[in-house]
Image (spheres, rainbow, N blue to C red):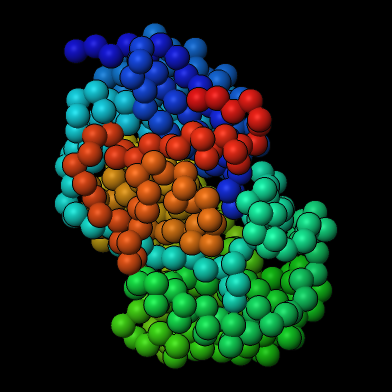
Length: 418
C-alpha cells in the first residue's frame, strides 16, 4: 500500500501561545499536526521536510527513524522534537483520513469513549498570552476584547529570573474561590491553579531564591483551602508550581496542603536533576506530577525512576503520539498515571485526546484555552469540549480540521498558507 508524501507546509497562529501547524500532503489529500511553541518552529519543520517528501506515509517508522537521526546534532530534544511531533501527528491524520479510520485506531484502538478534561485557570483571573520567549504579550484577539494594556514586562512569566512580582487581588483566596466556582459551574470536574504566585509576604530575595517563609507557606496553603472549600470534595483540584521552589520549601508547602486532598502538585522543583525530585517524592504523601519539559522515552524513563506517581508528557513536543504511546506503556508497568500537559489549539488537543483514549493508565488531559475566544473558532467542527469532556467519535484522522479563514486572521504572518 502506498501513499506518497508530496509536500509539507508550516504556519503559526497566535492564541494565548503560538500554535504552529504543519500540513503533510499526498497529492490532494493532507493531514494536519501541531508542534509546541518554540522560536522559529515553522523554519525547523521546513528544514526537515526533504527527509519526509517522497516517502510513503504508511512507512511512519522509517520516516521517524530518519527524523530522529537528523535530530542528533541538536541533542535529541528541544525544537527539533517539537517539529518531529508536528510532522508525525500530521502523517497519522493523513493516513487515518486515507483509510477512513480515527487516529486512535492507528494507535491500537480506543479504550474509552470520553476523555476527561481538567481546566487550567491560572489564578484569580485568566492568563495573559505569551510570546515565543514566554514573555507576556498582547495579541490581536485580546485587543478586540479590550482585555488589558500592552505588557511592559520583558521577563518570562515564571521562574526565578523574572522581575519582582507584587501581590494583587487576583492572587487572593477570594479570587481563587470565585474562579473555582465559575469553572465548576461550567461542568469541569477537575480544576488547576497556579501556586507559584506572589503573596503579601513575598520579597525580591524569596522570589529569586525559591525559598518560602513560614508566612508565605501559610498564605499559599490558604489559597488551596479556599479552592477546596468552594468546590467541595467531589471536584478534583490541582496546583502548578512551575519549578519555582527549592527542595526544603517544596517539602514544607506540600506537607501544608496535604489536608486539603489535592489531586496533585505539579513541578515543585527545577527539572534538571531527577534525584532532587526523588528526594521530594520520598518526603511527602502529596501526589507529585511532572514531565512536560522532557523528551522521548529516554527522558521520561529517567523521570519514572524517581517514583513519581503521575507523569505529564506533552505529545506535541516530546516525540509525537506513537512515542508517547510507548512512554505510556512504560509508565503503566510502574502503575504511573499519564495526564498530558496540553496548551495546544484544538488540533493538538484532539491529537492528545486520541492518544489518551488508547492507553490504559490515563488520568486527565489539560485544557488551557477556556478564556481564549478564538480557541473553538479555529476548529471547523465547533465546540470540542462539553461539560469537561471530549467525546471521541469515529470520524477519520484526528476528527477535527483547522478553519483557515479564522487562522489567517490571527496568524503570525499575514502570508499565512497551509
